[in-house]
Image 1 (spheres, rainbow, N blue to C red):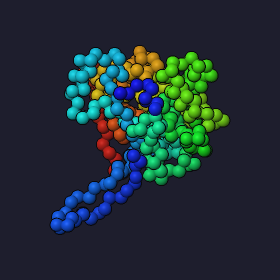
Image 2: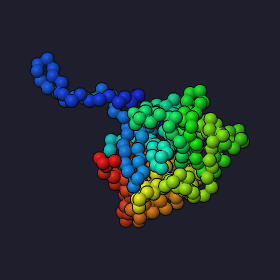
Image 3: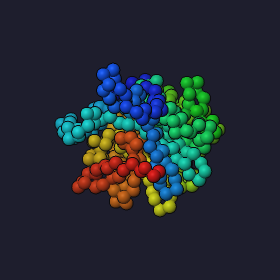
Image 4: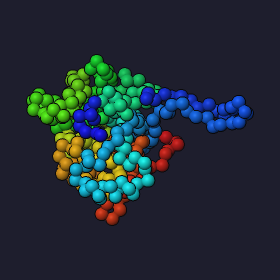
Length: 321
């Protein structure tokens, strides 16, 4: 069962499928089958901006992690889903290529802590991106499933030439020297992971107050509540928009219908619920495409209003991107 402690505690190969069918000893044919998962990558365009979704894996959640959810109502909501595992949360990161720069939004989780994660760097390599060519990493927040790709097992920066960009309240909270000492035992690994992630970039961290365009076409905007400085990234180019909203939604099966159902990992659950409702309303009213860290890979879709609730529709795959 997932909790804060064990949250912190398959390599993907780019194997080409054969074009011909296989023939067995009796001369019968069978369909070719990939011996391992293919890389988790999907590419989109927002105006002149190229966006590549990168899968890092998944986390299986449990209903009890949503403390404001009545058991019977939560189970009924899950029963409406045709999914075998309706509380499986995907973990996605995103590569943005714009204005001659390569920018990452988040970097996946730590495989040693969560074995179902850790595919980010292999998938980044499959996309043909060398870590040394990444110019910046924008962090929506400093939770362990968003910072795992920032440093290696020796604490060395995985992106040697990248600037780290995040909200000032987020940086201040997690790097506070007294936080580790006063944190409850089950929260300390979260703090240690966050501090280990930013330490290798200490001389190239840009801290943002309020809303600001950090790279041409990319605006960091406050989405506080899940963490003290949780942020979204608004991408705008040639009249098109995309909102990369971090952890606004953890469990699509539950939280689109009930934005007030918070998760235990929220620093301020009430603020997170208000932020979620505000972003859902904005995305639905303005028909802004969204990308979410925990939406089903590639995490790209649209929000619509459904009475007093909301609904999510995956965007069609763009073959021309």
